[in-house]
Image (tube, rainbow, N blue to C red; front, top):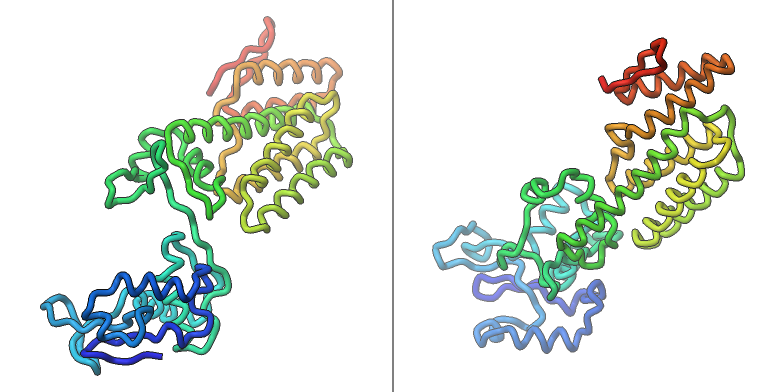
Amino acid sequence: YAYEVEGDVYFRAKKFKGYGILAHQDLAEMESNAAGRLDDGEMARKEDPMDFAVWKGANDGAISWRSPWGQGRPGWHIECSVMATKYLGNHLDIHGGGIDLAFPHHTNEIAQTEAHTGEKFVEKWLHNGFVTVGDEHEKMSKSLGNFVTVHELLKQVDDPMIIRFFMATTQYRRPVAYSQRNLDQAARNLERIRTGYRNLQFRLATATAGADAAIEEKAQAFVDTFVAVMDDDFNVQDGVTAVYNLVNLANTYATAADVKTDTAQFILRQIAELMNVFGVDGMAQDDILDADVEALISAREAARAVKNFSRADEIRDTLTTQGIVLEDTPQGVRWHRA
């Protein structure tokens, strides 16, 4: 598959069956484009304009190593093949990278690796879109100086989960349009989910034992939809919609006259698990709202009035875990935060 010319070693691209398929490239078009990028010296050395270097001779005093073809260094593409097979083996389940690497880098990586091993190199390729900035959707890059680091972003955003939610809920092949407006929208969407989660979580204190099969069936349908669309090339847009539907169900169920403990816990568990797929945790609010404290105290008083002391104790325990201290006085219940 390779040949040496004046200390350089080139790979015969056309000899590799299926060259260019990964990036949906046409051979004739690739050959024309390749020829347009070569100078007269390279055209003279190569058997074909599409051939690429796996070893470059070095006479410029830069870093180099001894080889059968003289001093030189590996080509850009061969470095990745060597590292991948050395540390991960001849066959990779998943290989990722930016969409701009599909051709020529990953195309050449496949050709040289499979020519060497005789095995299929990669099972699944995942090429991600760029992060873009500004109204012109310019690619964010270090060379353009228009990039923002995560460390810098964390100084602007109170909750790092917002950044995760913002990044993870764009389908990986699509560009991520970074802007303060889109980041703020992600924050609002995440708070919408957390609010629904908390609304149902606080109803647990006044829930009754048992389950509601019909409600759980609805919740499971949204979970099944989530799994199906995420299995379809990580369709996160429809995946988030399924989460929103589940959260809407949580909000509706939280206002029901009779909330069942098992069902509420089932819905809460599903919301948390689906959000964990996006790397987002912390559904519960750190500080319970005053209105929710008052509502739980009222529920506790109602339980005590009918001598349901076990339920009253459960509500007290729930408030204690939220950092709320209750004081039973002759004038009524007083509370404060621990």
